Length: 407
Image (tube, rainbow, N blue to C red):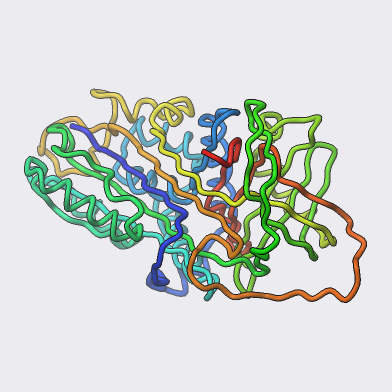
């Protein structure tokens, strides 16, 4: 039987109320380990490198993918559990410790910044014709606050029910992720959604946005609305690239970090350097400088199957009938071999002068009494890389690249 692991990850411009996760016990929060988050970031970089195409826009959510896969990991046994641990970069981490860390992370992320919304939702949809392990169901409910529902998957309306949940959690941006009728061999869906809404701490002035040329990854030139602002930014310049941090909200705990490879270099070469060690070094080297930024106004969508990328990372046995072992999900004697059928990943990104949300945003006005001398001028007019990270936990929520802002 198939376990369809579907991951719906969105960065969207739509109205939605902030929904913090339930606060776990203080002992759970006290045991939170940033080193585990760092390992998951490293997995995110590895997964991203398996997916990128130099001429295409790409975006994934390391947090969203790992939470969805960790729920499935709780039902894995034997070789399947071992290969998943290696692929997900969690070797040597006890499952209970991993779950507690995720429980703390969910709370810390969703409550990090009062004026930034980060809503994360998990759900477990079960075919009522199977007997599922109660410990497995309770584990994902307790640690991932997953909504668990039993449905008759042979009923075409079951797909509508699941899709409605996804639509509600994504403010209507994604209204279908499960096709009807549901495949007769599917017995479960694990679904994760991530919703982010943040206003720039210092918004761009709409009146200064202008049409500029952007040289795409395939060498074409496209006219693009480019936003402009000047001021003090956390900035880094190396022999290969420049980077800048654009924070959200009043507390500035979450930010988009943008990387522009030098013209003599390329986005492909830069992305080859992506790993947690380099990332940490880069973040530690950011220092405040005065400068100007030109950044494209963006609306991007991506849709990917992660099955091949996860297989390439060593998790292939989890997708193989007769080899995958997810016996921890069902009761003894319930019948049928369980494998993961697919892992789908959808994203939507919109960035404008106010931030990543079309609703009203906090505006920080910076007045200049004289023309300053700038330390840098940064024009994102060619392919670049970006990530959205929470500074407190170190978790990378989203990462991606822009090869053509017009797509």
